[in-house]
Amino acid sequence: MEEEYKYIGRIMKAARRFKKANQESVSKAIGCSQSALSKLEHGSLVPSAPQWFVFCRHLEIPVYSIETWVIDRLTPILPEDINPPIRWNKRYRSHRQIKSRELYPLVSYLRESRGDDAVEQMFKELDIDIDLAVDFDYQINHLVLFDVLNYFVQKSIISGENIKLIADQYAKPVVHGELYHAYQRSHSLKELLDIYLRDQQYYQADLCFEISNLSERGCSLIIKADKHLEGFLKETNPAIVSLYGQYLKLRLEALFTQLLKRKVSVTYVGAGQALREFPERLILSLKWYTPLRDSPKSQ
Image 1 (tube, rainbow, N blue to C red):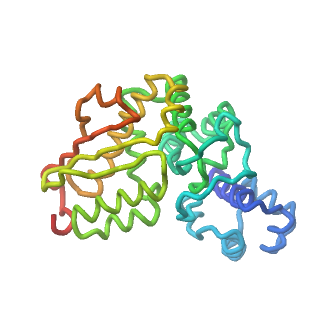
Image 2: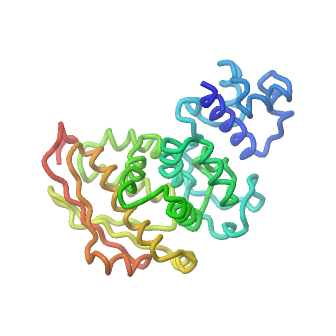
């Protein structure tokens, strides 16, 4: 229970900071003292139901954030804030083009396997504001993601065996928000894939996705990167880039296996050559097999 209070407090603090509101104004809005709000943000108190509803309305966050433990306003990529409300290492201050929701699978795995203290330690060592762990709509760039992956390797958190466990976190509905419900309501495979492409365009601008050769048994997914991403990759260990490529593959398998209710296999066209060409282009082959249960409506 204390851990849950801590997560609720983290959400309240992040929501206030991202709105650039001070404790005095927020405490007045929800009808408590400033010291009480401070205790709420530190997880030593929990808000009452009326306080929570007023808080969410005042700071424009979803009421269900208290259940998901993340803030997801479902906003598309927005221009970067020239005066960000978070502590932001200057290494990451240029060209933010993906949402911080991309961190969730890694943060979620780290929390489940090593506890929240390990999450706090990682953000501290990387000099990244921990508010990014709960606010899905803040812009980050791929360099942040690569540094987190590198941290996982250095701390022996990640390996060839458990990278799939991390990729499985990507299939959680919370990662995709309302778009996950759109996946489930799709009436055909093509519609599901179209929604997925919209998902990618909605939450990131670094990578462009294109579906081709769609059939009843599979399709090709072409991934291309913007020019600036090449500069980020020059600062990244090639082994981490390769790991990222493996992570992309496995998380697609996890998501589409869950959505299609059948086994989905993803392979690189050209294998090693494809990874060496990244970020210019990646081509993945998606194949799906016998349904595990009822498949989506007509294929």
